[in-house]
Image 1 (cartoon, rainbow, N blue to C red):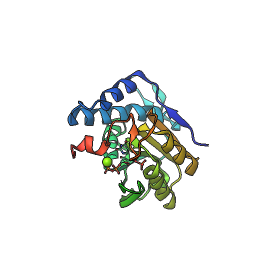
Image 2: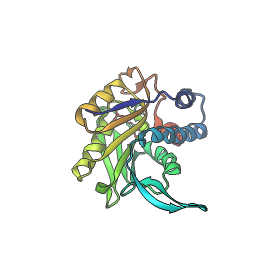
Image 3: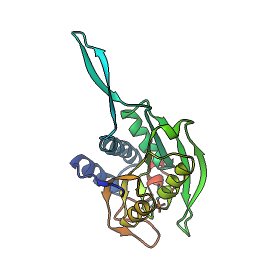
Amino acid sequence: MSKVIIMDHPLIQHKIGIMRRKTTSTKEFRDLVSEVAMLICYEATRELPLADIEIETPLVKTIAHEIAGKKLCIVPILRAGLHMADGILNLIPNAKVGHIGLYRNEETLEPVEYFCKLPVDADEREIFVVDPMLATGGSASAAITLLKNKGISKIHFLCLIAAPEGVKRLTELHPDVDVYIGALDERLNEHGYILPGLGDAGDRIYGTK
Ligand SMILES: O=P(O)(O)OC[C@H]1O[C@H](OP(=O)(O)OP(=O)(O)O)[C@H](O)[C@@H]1O
Ligand SMILES: O=c1cc[nH]c(=O)[nH]1
Ligand SMILES: [Mg+2]
């Protein structure tokens, strides 16, 4: 069974509230994507395993803790996920980054794959798939299926806004994947957009509309 964690932190709610406004500028929106991604990532990495290592402070030897094993891999779903990855890299600068390119066919709303490039050791890493919007859940589910087909198993999914329809589809198809959500909205409209939502995340990040 997937763990579905909906963020209740006031900072996240406040920042998402600004992102939703249609008057928020492209620059401000982009900065907020990166900040909220960092805050969600802080929560999503809470259970990472630690290893003890001996270090020397200026005074004594002691045991410190570091993240165990191979480090992390962030996998943004293009385009809109890219800016979440940039934010998370501020927190975890040594993470590797894989890219999956998907867009939604506007009529069927089904995802179309156009790019995939992953680190060669991705199957040994803890993977964080990131995309601001979980709408029908088609894109997130397809990205995770693609990763699993390459032998990758330790997968988490992070998004800023989700619709209940997307959460249902993703958790039914991938019950082994934990899902971290900035805000859970009401529903999808007839065009597959999240309500109240924030519009088209990719267009708002890159100013393409
Ligand atoms: O859950 P779904 O119904 O699949 O919808 C969510 C997808 O739609 C958006 O991408 P879009 O197709 O607009 O591509 P873009 O990021 O290039 O704008 C969003 O960033 C997700 O990837
Ligand atoms: O509301 C939505 C749904 C899909 N993709 C977006 O960018 N926004
Ligand atoms: Mg888009």
